[in-house]
Length: 88
Image (cartoon, rainbow, N blue to C red; front, top):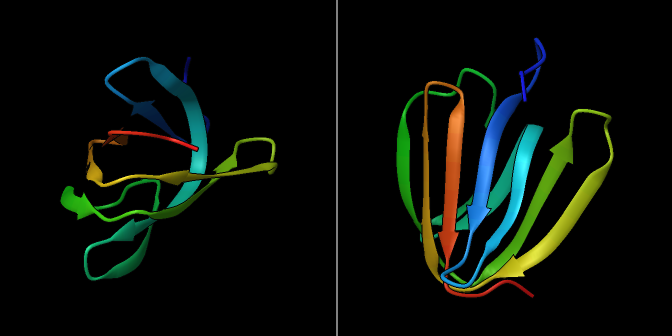
């Protein structure tokens, strides 16, 4: 999927499956030191995640929220990946 001028690609993955793959305009996630938000052209980042709520805003401006267990989040070059043990 090609990104729009405002979006970036993200994969959200558990050990069991690929939960989500697509374009988002932002993601808010629970880092070990607090919530953080990532948007297009964010500087490279690697963060440990704690259990908490994740919110993604899709290219069509709709929102999806879910809860993740501990995990990791990485973004580089307008491509992000969120790895977690479990999603509820």
